[in-house]
Length: 366
Ligand code: AVJ
View: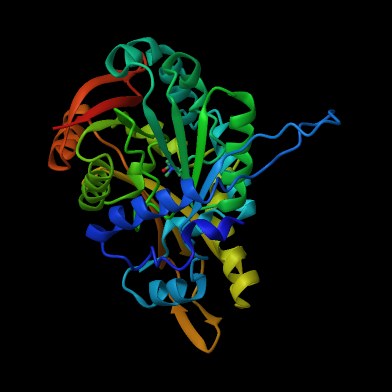
């Protein structure tokens, strides 16, 4: 059922200029073929009351863990991209990180969102198409829905099962909302359903996920977001701010050791999924703020000289040699204004918490 939507259309390879045309054709086919719906029985009822969401699948495909790990370990310095953190265990550990006393980001952003909705509504008004990138459990958007009253919501995430279950729950909880879901790797492409009739489009990109991108890549992604909205829309984005280095360092070096476990879980994945002889116990978590680059860096450091095998490839590690697993960039409000402007946006309003730890920024295309 899910495949109908993207059947044979080669989304992943379509050149950017063609993608919107192709997409319009898919939308038409979608409407004329009748909706591809996903039904969910309401518990406790004998009558089948169903909540339908419209689902689009670009088949982002499973990442090639082996290929990317082998090429990343052969590089100097060695790197593995942070997207590989999020297997089932990694996602659980990340949820646990969000609850940590040292990890101020999640709760601060949620407080800011609670406090800014009224002003946000003044800018945006009702009946927008709200697109959430990396929607995950769609928890943060719930803080906006009642007051913002968008007419449509589109959740975009790479993880299909999670996306489907969370958007279905959203559709059940907000029966007035037209709910769509798109399974897309937005770091590669933003070919997603695109509502021609919606007067205004708002993209919601919370969680400071933008911090994982190097500044040039962040500009590129934000520019693609602007294009997706036809250079006419708002971007509501969560951005972590520069602050006292000790606060940053403890947020990524929590006393309970959850962030260390999250980082080391990458090696457990490599051991279990790639049949490698790597021993996660032979590496240690290392996270620190790099003031020159304005970013937290996470590394896995080899505790001694060792050789690890993946397939028929061997990698020699010196004691103290590291694998760079994540960057998390921090910005001042002015720095982010500059980045936004390079991507075709202007800052309309910036909300922060009392302590200036985190920001939620409303950007408008120019
Ligand atoms: C999900 C990328 C925003 O950078 O703070 C948390 C991931 N890494 N602790 C971040 C993360 C270690 C998080 N982001």
